[in-house]
Length: 563
Image (cartoon, rainbow, N blue to C red):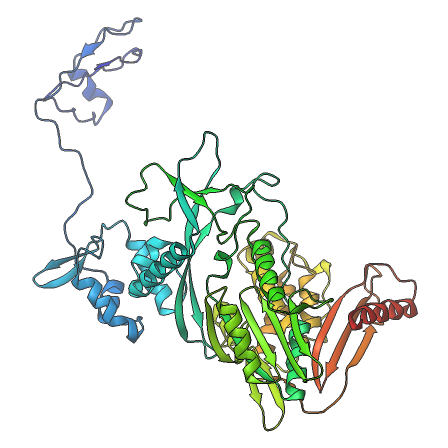
């Protein structure tokens, strides 16, 4: 190795470092430099001088692997603080088995110690925090460091067994230039009406974003039952005293088959590659989660099964099937939400007959009487001929998610003294910085599902705050929090049918005060037996010249829904 010195200035001292030499101290005064020899100035750079390397090279610094005492937060986790009691035994078991802990723990003086230089320390913190809040792991690595990993591992093995039993794929060598789709694990927690964990689910999904339209798939549309249809059927069943049951089709998306012209290759499940696979990949025979054509293939398969059982498809809602015998007074209606089916029939024997027929084609889980549907709690009062619907578990969940459960409850969904407009968008750098970290879009989306499903009382308020989602300001965010405060105080309200035996009633209206863009807001609501079964509110697509014209437009939208 050679070094070349820079050009020397006149009167400048020149010092060449050599092995064993030490740098001299800087002169204290200008006169002290006279005691040193002054090199001869030269315009040419000095010749390069070879630097001899020492025999004993210094040891390169590396990260320490010694065992340190755990931090306070680690000691809290070990002692059980911040960890749910049911998972404490699993945590202690993972500490006891050092090999399964992935090198996180070590024993010192018969005491488990955490290696501070462990690379997965951050993942373990996230796993413990998620477990305390009953959250779902985002990755397989995070799930492995959670105390409830045995539950996730069991769910993964059940999923692989289901896929193998269904013949979802076969091993093949890929032809040159073939598109190989990736795969990943999605871990979900199913909760009951009280918000407690019911069971763990693991789904192997395909990374469908790598599919090519027109080559790997064509049509993707798949209908599901409308919420209005669900409410109407429940109301009718309550009035006529019909039985209401529910079933779940296990591995629904895995039952539909791909066409012969749909050739799809996929990588092996992460962490669970077959020992005899070699260089071969998976050739999909049946559909898998998150494929582009997945929903449509399942809908076509389920429709063919219902038609073979003698059911007919509803003309106005393609996800509602019915079977009727007029002279016997027998009626069976099935509402399909992907893999969840709500069954209403005049007798229990008709429901059992339908379950037996579906069991010949799919693996059906019998959930007995209807009590939980799409995150909606259903409570039936058969002696009083009343049925109650509520989303209190969902409302409690979103309040905890956005840390708004401790706010003071309010009695109205909006502040009538505040008028929202686009002029309240951020106008300064401070306001932009404040709104940058505000989860405005996510919060409005969470409120929108509640407004569409069971809370028509917040429909107008949610529609107003959704208009400013492109550039929300502090005033708009305060309006969103106002809606959350209203839900906090009214989460125990139920949407009830049967208080009054009334036929179908419909109301339509438009706002009298025109907005700045002269586009009126129209809405409608339809009620059966004292409860709303369908409602909507949105801005009109045309610019009305008068309030009378706006009223006619609102009446037209209501009439279309009634028909």
